[in-house]
Image 1 (cartoon, rainbow, N blue to C red):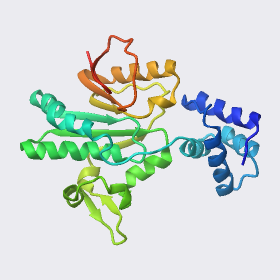
Image 2: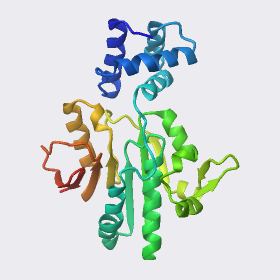
Image 3: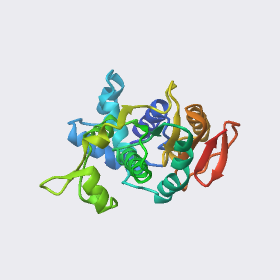
Image 4: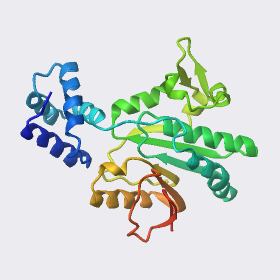
Length: 266
C-alpha cells in the first residue's frame, strides 16, 4: 500500500509525540508494515486504524503500531566485546567491594540481551566461586516484545550464538528444537514496560545500564534528555553501554567517556 502525505505525517507525528521516535525517513517501511497491520486486524484504511489507535485508552493498538514500525532486531550475546569487557574488567571491579549487583537492559526487545547479561554474570560468579545478590531489569516500549521476553522461548536460529555449554546449563530444549530459558535464570530477571520519554526514577540505582542501538531512533535533544536520565539511574562509578556504532555528546558532567560506546558515572 502507499500512504498519502496526510496519512504518512499523521503516523510520523503520532509516533514522535508519544514515543519520541523519528520515522520521517521510513516511509517505505511504514507503507509495508501498515499494510500487514490493516490486513491482520481487519481495518479498511489508515484513517480508520489511526482513529482507533488514538481512541484506545489501553494503548493496545498503539503497542501494535510501535511494535511493527520499530525494528526489534536483537540476538543473544550481541556485540560480544561488551560481554568480554564485563567479564574481564567490570564485574571484578564492581563485585570486589559490593555484595550485590543490578543491571538494566533498557531496550531489551524480546529479552535476549537481558538473558545474556544474566547468564554472563552467573558464569562469572560460578568461575570465581562467589555468591552475590544479582538482579537484571529488562524494559521495553513494546508489550508484545516483553511478552516474548517473559515467556523466554526461542527458536534454534535465535539461539545460534549461544554456546552448547550455555544451552545445556541455561536452557531446556523442546521436542520441536526450540529452546526455553530455565527458571533459575528467569527468577533473576524482572521485565517491565517503559517508555523512555516518560519520567522515571528508581530508588535502587544500577551498577550497569545497557542502552544499546536505540538512541539512533531519537532526535538529538531527546537523546540528551534520555542519557541524562540514564546517568541519574546509575550509582556513582556505574557504567552506561550504548551501541558500538552509536555516539553521544557528553554535555553533562555526570558521565565520562571510557572508550567507544562505554561511559562511566562520575
